[in-house]
Image 1 (tube, rainbow, N blue to C red):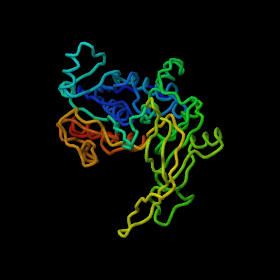
Image 2 (image 1 turned 45 degrees about the horizontal axis):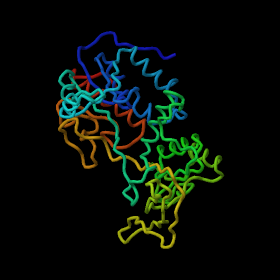
Image 3 (image 1 turned 90 degrees about the horizontal axis):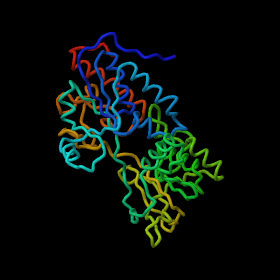
Image 4 (image 1 turned 90 degrees about the vertical axis):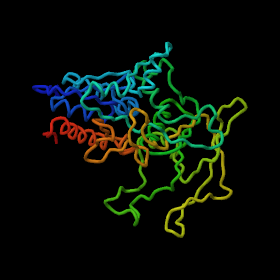
Length: 368
């Protein structure tokens, strides 16, 4: 029932959006409605960013939801350029000189020179690593290096091409929680893993709010997501083990992962009233593991597109409500500006950034 809505006229202003995740799509949609000509650049072969490859298909249907919406946006006048990475000018020149290079790139400054405004919505893509002994062993992967090829292979061939990391017949350990950790659990169950264990560093949360967690703070309570429920049914027990610190990755003579050594930790307040983690002596154990997935969040966006200011957390420095960066006519929104967050926050930031870009270009704005 949703129909394409092309604007009645165009302003003549051209805007480039780098990244086609929720923030980029939201910004592009609003700016197109305002009559601007919008081009969205996406490095992957399919448009959608996190919505396409970061969230498994069983959780967000790509054809019925994501691709349908993108088609509506295309029919409304938005141009999508997929399979093209926006990189620094130096990297773009190097790719041009490299005869063996197969990827499509465009220099950020070159792109900016032919647009009236640029919006960076590249997301927080640098994952947090776990520098424990044995990290180099084969079988240890970042969560997105597991989830992204899985979804791509599913869409390309219904997993028949084998171009993904399979959990079938393996003992899987997921380190870290959140939505991404849950998606790793659910995907591993569907692959046919022998077992799935999810390690959480923090203690088991209470069923109800604690006294030091009043409204309107986010309720830090025990929750069961789809992945936890499915693993419980598949393997007969809750997959999460709380207050566990990873001490070491263990491997065989061929360099393959065979186990994860963990130790219990106790959280208690120190003299300053801050929670402090202490290892529980004698609680070490080794979990059987030949596939370990690291899901510990993200440090921030990849840098280097422009010579721009970065904030203390490593994100693109752009003030809330203004969204402009230290580079003329370049704006930032979503996780690359605020840090790792949720899809709804990314959509909100994309829409608000669009309003400020419209104001920047036209002197005023009617966008909400």
